[in-house]
Picture 1 (spheres, helix red, strand yellow):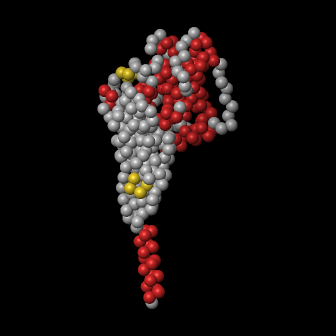
Picture 2 (cartoon, helix red, strand yellow):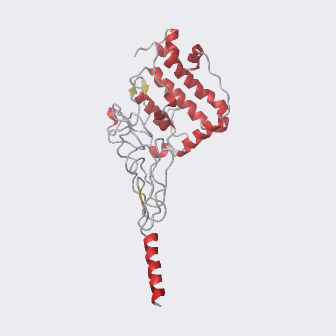
Length: 299
């Protein structure tokens, strides 16, 4: 009897230790592209602590850090750790300072940073004090009218997000491009718009990738002209990099799991294809904006 009672007491102690104490979770935030999250540990009654995931207040996975990035906020139930690329703490608002420094700080994650940008992912943004700009939009920056800053929860709830001015570019991406290249010639921002529009079309139906990639390639060829070849035709070189292939741009354009998944499906569908490169002089013709009118402007 004594041995049986001792065995029962030992089993009960093990159950308490394993079932109710909670276990350590893995990292909550995903990586630099805010692509996917890693589950926190099993919670138990008090929830396991995820390294970056937040505390779970119930059984199951570590809490869902509703903000993005390091130290995602406390979750109130089951869920994965928060996504993000060094985004702000908490449930949307937080420390938005991330990669690099812009005029008002580069904002990362969903929501506004203390001095960071509005918008998702990396980018020069308004900052919490909005840098003097109104979130409702309507003001002009480098000749472009700012669209309203979209509610991140609404904007990120669908594949295509919010495009309030119907120009084919998601509002948060448009604002990011305007601020990012506000000190450059307007052609540079227009190239960014062209690429953003192309990707919006491409991710709608990845099965048509070999058709829609022509739009993406046109934006890249237009970019290439003003990066590498314009001076051969008596026109100015305006940019030193390819806008829509940068990590910074893709982090903003493909900032949710749904958008990342669609982009990967599009990219995969291009596998095995053969694609022609146009001659240097023809690349200018692939710009979808009025190049002649914009070149008359000085910067």
